[in-house]
Length: 335
Image 1 (cartoon, rainbow, N blue to C red):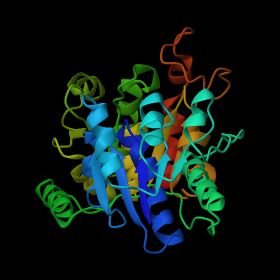
Image 2 (cartoon, rainbow, N blue to C red):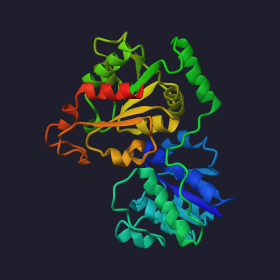
Image 3 (spheres, rainbow, N blue to C red):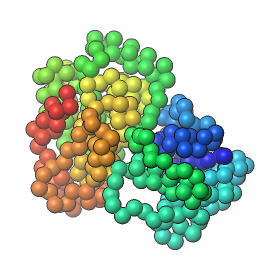
Image 4 (cartoon, rainbow, N blue to C red):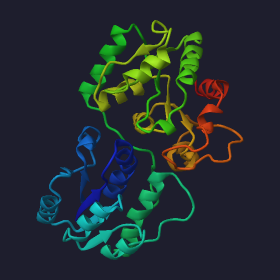
């Protein structure tokens, strides 16, 4: 049996879909499982041992993409994206089973379209529910999943990169922490001075703080390190897997609700994640009992938490009202 897992967009979305790969390989012995992702997904998927094939979506040539999928003669296409591009690609795939949640009129493009669960839950669990709905519709056993945590498999070269960086910095495994203060949506980013205070508190406890960053985030790093460049280090520019390898040896990783958090969880790092406009129940493994070393923190007494807005009409109080002391206490509970 040939199965295509379809999840476009960002790294976090892709990582949150990875538990489905191991689940399908276990539930359907002998199945070939491929993944269709956008180019950014290659670096976190290409080393996954349960993945038989990786297709890269070409946004500029959607018709050609349909032809590529049809030529591979999939028995099942499971659309975890549920947007117009993915639903029409699924419908035209030629697969016997076309699977996606019932989100409205486009559900007619699927022949297995269970309703979206009404109760909020950790996103990987919801994705696994969709896979199980297909198994049940096909008359196959649909066992409970063994794991709902995102999966990332590091290559030896990634581990060697992290080991060499640790050696050059004079560190030991667990003697440093990583903070990821940037976010592409400013509304989801905690204050620079807050991250600075957490970094300095960790430094006082003998844990060296480093900032994770990427191109275009230099200004955020400067704001966090202001006046403390010698105390708060910077990670080198890395690939995502190299960064994950550094995360994996850290004492903890402190982030906003971002792709960096999902990368840290997939790498097995203890995490402290700061939430405001998004809900921990959707995105944090601790809310599903799958993250004993993960902590989700948000402001108390703010009525609009979890608003899901991209611009704030009330002064960003979910982030300005979250005191440094609460985040520091969460870090202490992890370390």
